[in-house]
Amino acid sequence: MDEKGVFLADIRTALGYTKEETRDMEQCPAVFADVDDSLILDRIQYRTHVEKQALLQILQDNGEQLRLEVHPVSSLDAAAETIVAIIKSTKPEFSTARQIIQHDHPDLIELGLWKRMAGEAVHVHTAYSNDSEVREKSVESFIGITVPRWAVAESATVVQITGPGRPRSTSLLPSVHIALIRLEHVLADLTEVYALLGDEPPKESFVFITGSSKTADIEAHMVHGAHGPRQTHLVVIDELMVQKTTPLKGSGIFASAEI
Image (cartoon, rainbow, N blue to C red; front, side):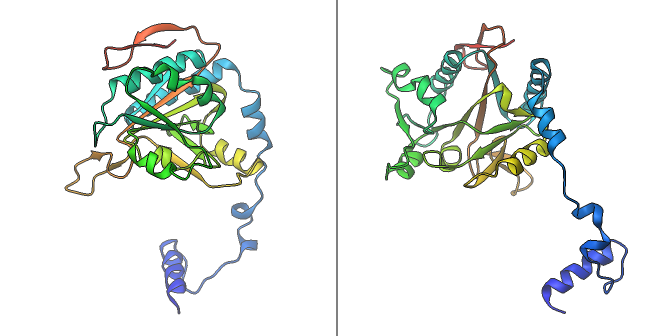
């Protein structure tokens, strides 16, 4: 028996079968049955604003446990104010240079961060697909800003789909990751994510990001930022939300947020 056969035999034994008792797909119709995702897709499509806000609350609660700070805002302009406040209150981890890099996405372009950061000694890069220095700019940046495709309330996960002008390095290399998303793209759970991925398979890769990077390899002591960003923010635009001004947590800087 080869190595694969031994591995499968061990699994059969653990499940209470004999090592020789192999099964085929026809013996397990429920496991291999085609899944009808239409009901899931309908549920997503017809979700009310109240239901979406309930998901946002779950996302906030679960994100807090994973060092994912969720900032509900009522408009792109309010999102820009919040992101600027985060940039101003964050110091670079490895150098004194204040560079940030953002995905080439219409929502981020509309924020006009390079204008809002004028006079702040912050250099704003955009990860244009024809820029041969994107990798170097990502390495030098202390903040990466992206627009994930979805956010999952149940696990506080953002789902990033890569593409031209939207590399994985933007959410991976900088010490701080800021994600911008609209409320209608907040989903309940991974079942809804896979239903949407099955309905419209992405042309390139996708990555699931749950909170900041962390490891407890050494003496079970939790360390954040070991293999990726040590700090993560998710700015959620809810255009039906009533806006008020509130201080950004721990910064002393005021940004538009809440209700």
